[in-house]
Structures are given as C-alpha cells and as structure tokens.
Amino acid sequence: AGVRESAACALGRMGTAGKAHAGEVARFVGDGDAGVRESAACALGRMGTAGKAHAGEVARLLGDSDAGVRKSAAWALGHMGAAGAAHAPAIARLLRNSDEGVHQHALIAFGCMGAAGAA
Figure 1: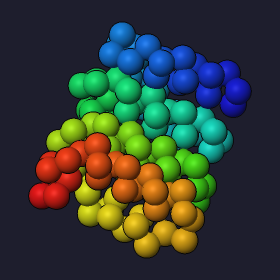
Figure 2: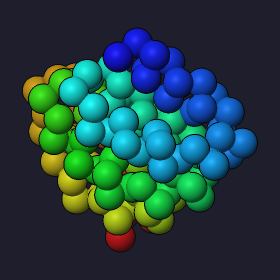
Figure 3: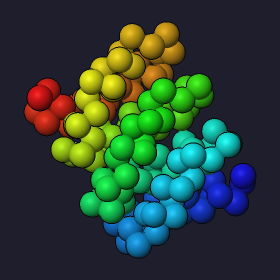
Figure 4: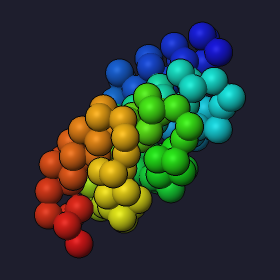
C-alpha cells in the first residue's frame, strides 16, 4: 500500500504534468487501503482535465467509511470545476457529516467551485 500511496502522491504533485498517468491513479480509487484511496483522490484533483475525467470515480469516495478519504474526495471535486460541481448534491450531504473535518472540506469544495457549485 505504501508504494501505491507514494506513487499517487508523487503524480499528484506533478499536477498537469502527471496527467498521462491519470488512468492508473484512478485505479487506486478502489484500493483496499484508505491511504491509497485518499492519495488517489488528491492526485486526480491536481491533474487538471485528465483528473476531471475521473470525477465520477472520485465522487463515489464521498461515501467512504474513512473520514480522510471523504475529505480528500470533497477537496478533489472542488478542484475539478464543472466536472466536480456535477456532484454538488453529494458534497452537500457531507455538510451534515458528524466529522468536523469532513464538514469543513465540503465547505472548502464549494468555495473552490464558486458559482458552478451553486447550480
């Protein structure tokens, strides 16, 4: 799990330069390790258009059992523009989450989306 998590983090730090590997990173969204799923969501959020193509996969993580994964998914969707805004209703449900960090990341996501998240 550590290697997959590190790989996703490294590719995410590359931003749009890592976009050629978005498909491989998207596979990590379904990993059995929460740290890998969390890193994959963040990486896809940083990959620009290539990451946006996987917004639906990231959105499924909004219901993850791990709070860190839910936070990362909300953050990533917030950085995916209209592709992320398409999942605004699911992000809005996180505003009722008992984990304060999850709640805060949902608010951050809406702030990043701007008007696109209000639709």
